[in-house]
Length: 232
Image 1 (cartoon, helix red, strand yellow):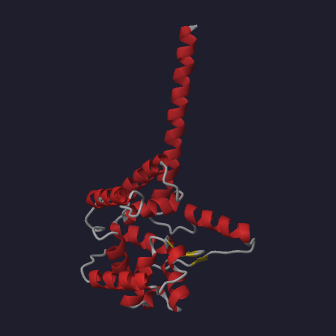
Image 2 (tube, one colour):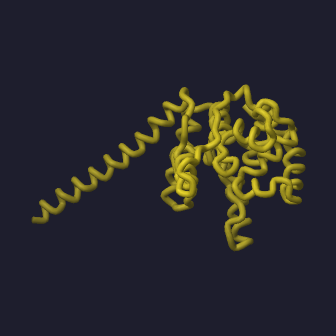
Image 3 (cartoon, rainbow, N blue to C red):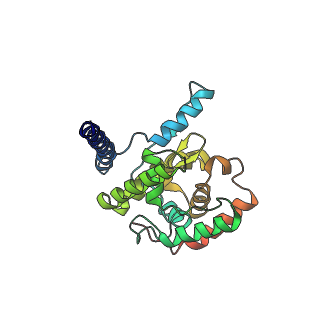
């Protein structure tokens, strides 16, 4: 009897391990594919589109892929300055930045700062949800390691700039540049790029008042830091 129970437990454990391996293999397969192929959509985009279509069944996302060289260098520098100033040097995680964010959140008694790198944000946007559960964060970390292992920094930044959310139904640098400035992503100037970059932590919130005193101040801060930003 005991042998039978032990055997079934081992089978269940093995089945669980195989299921986890298959699930991780699915993620890894997409990471390898998107190293050379451009994503047509992401899980984050699908979630937002579902939300929009719950209100308007005909809703569509604003999204157009542009290659890395067709994105203004000002925007590349602005995004790195605003979101991840150690981007070209770290291996996916900014441990010092995470520690500072944790200390700031503890001091405020609530989450007011993140510590996610561009690589971590990309992992979330490609595959995961906005939730902050321990499982989601663990999966994000695994995917981040794969992105850093199999992609170079140029590819990571290229895909990030193309799939990140920049407003209600607005995804990617090209759609954002046209939405806010009626320009292509290639034509963005330094101040325009800085203003887009400071929207990234909460784009659907900041798009309601992109020229508020807070946004103006943050834009000037990022403008001052852009000259020191290193990009691939």
